[in-house]
Image (cartoon, rainbow, N blue to C red; front, side):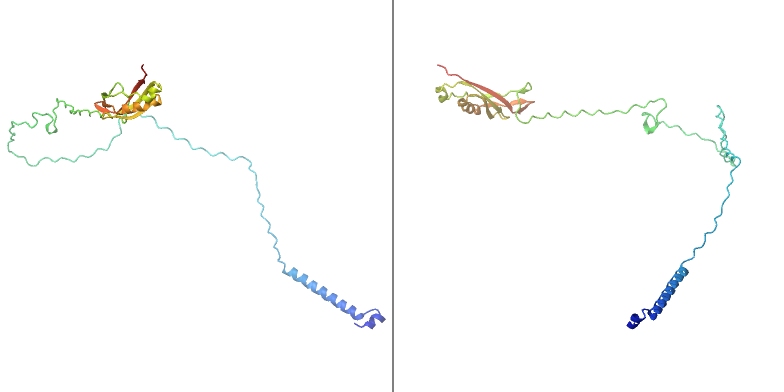
Length: 248
C-alpha cells in the first residue's frame, strides 16, 4: 500500500476494488453452498389418499340363531318284556349210522369189592346222605410261664421273703473310756446279709460317736442263713439296735 496515497488523496481505489471482489466472491460461495444443500435434500413423497370406508347402520336387528331341539328321552323298559333274540349257534347235522352190528349185548359181571365202601371220603367221593366231619384241631399245650426274675441288689424283707436266720450273733462290748466318761445312748446299725449269709455294708444310722466302732466290729462278725425269695437266696437289708446303759 502506498502511504502517499493515504496522506494526499485520502481514498485508496485499489483497496476498494479488492473489497468489492472479495464481497462478490464470498456471495458466490454462499450461493453455491445453499444450492448444493437444496439439491442434496431428499424429496418426500406425498402420502397417498387413504380409502374411506362407508359404514351403514342396519335398519333392523339381526335374527337370533335357532337352537337345536333337545333329543326326546327314551321310554322306560316295560316289565315282563321278553329279551331280544340272540343269535343261536347252528348245530351240525347228525348223520345216521350206516352199519348196524348184530352181535348181542353183554353185561359186565358185578364185582364183590366196592371201591367206595368204608370211608365215604375215600377217593374224593362223598355219598349224598353223608356229612363231612369238621377237621380236628390239635390243641397245643400252653407254654410254661417264664421264670420270675430275681431282684438285683439287696431288698427289704416283706411277706414274700423269708428273713435270714442267725447262726452267730455276739453283742458289742461297752468301751471302758465311754463308760468312765458316763456316756450312754442307743446305737442303730444298718447292714446287709448277702446270698451267702455274710454281713456287708455295715453303716451307723445314729448313736454316740464313742460307742459306734464297738457296734460295727460286733455286727461285722455275725453270720446268717441267707434270706429266701421264690426258692432262691437273696440279699436283704437288716437293722440292729444296741442300747448302752451304765448300771451301778
